[in-house]
Amino acid sequence: MPPMTSFEAEYAALVLGLTTVKRFNPAAVHVFMDSQGVIDQMTGQRRVISQGLKVWHNQACHLAHQFKKITFTHIPRDFNQLADALAGEAWAEAEKGNNGTGTSS
Image (cartoon, rainbow, N blue to C red; front, side, top):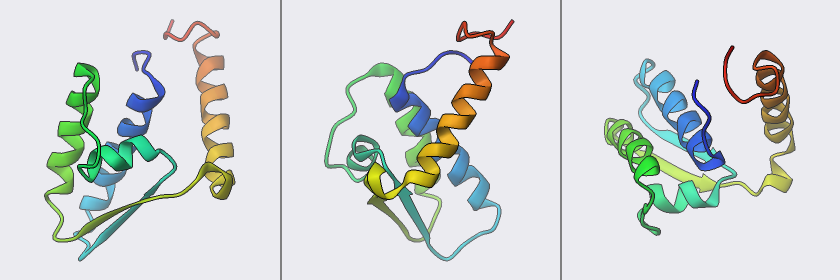
């Protein structure tokens, strides 16, 4: 996977989550994230300016519109310590696999 910003990583996680849950055809989807920026962009409260993020945002919006009901809720990182710890572990493992270079070898 190419290097990405933290915002891009948040969107990648959102896209992966929405793609995964779509298989179950749920009546409603509730998205909880600690990225206030992504939540604000997905709810139309903040514009997406970065061209790189627009690709991710468009993909996430396309997926979100496939659900009958979807909500987005911000969870402050202080209240999301388990997810934050797991993300840190995944990041550390990825860095080990990339020899700390940020790219695959």
